[in-house]
Structures are given as C-alpha cells and as structure tokens.
Image 1: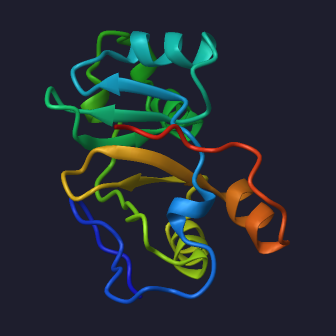
Image 2: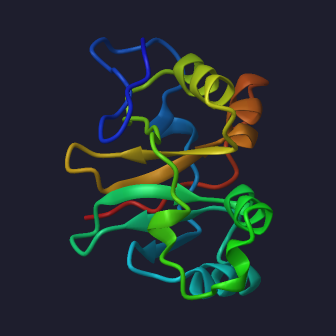
Length: 154
C-alpha cells in the first residue's frame, strides 16, 4: 500500500489482515480553523488541547496538522514576532492522511517515511475520525489493547 499526498488518504483497496488505522487510532485532541493565527495555535498548545492540532476549513474538512515542530520552525524563521501570522503559513505541504482500513504496517511506514508523530485518519469527505500516533502503532504492535478509544460519531 502506498501513501498519498494532500488531499488523498492512504490506499485501502484490500482489507488487511490484522489491526487497521480504525482499530488503533486515538481521539483527536484539538481542532483549529485554518484561519486561526499563530497566537491562537500557541494558546491551544498551552491550554493542553493536545500535542497535535488538526486544521480544518470552514466545512470541517481536514486541511493539515500542526504539532510542536511547526512552532519550533516558526521560531527558527523568526515568525513568532508576528503572532497574527495565519497558521496556513505554518502548515507545510504536502501532508498525508490515513483511511480507516489502512493496515498497521501502512500506518507505521507512513509515520517513518514522512518523519511524523501523528497522522490523521479521514473519511471519504476528509473529515477527521481520529489520529494514529507512533505510540498507537507501538502499542498495537506489541499486542496491547488500545487504551484510548476513538469517539464514535453518529
């Protein structure tokens, strides 16, 4: 299976044997609108909204993911002086996503290949169902049941 880049989701043409992204994903800790400013993102991290913020458009569709690395990059390029900078300038392209039936192996490969800590799991409409973290993959790989179950919609 291969990873696809924005706006696609992982290739899930065959049902994998074993755990899938749906089985191992964690609930989304924080969501922020793509028109938010750097100040709002920093506040979200400081308020404990999670280690990763999912960026969504006005229709609630995922447009990117922000993590502590993005804030560090902003500092590196001296962007922190302008707290009103839109976060769209921090969300680097391309970003990747998983689909619910993607295998645990695909999850692990994408985390390593793209040097990520977390990847969103999206439905067909690019709405976020959860996120797969490196911790989720390790926990599933050693046979431990997931301790954080995703919230079910619907």
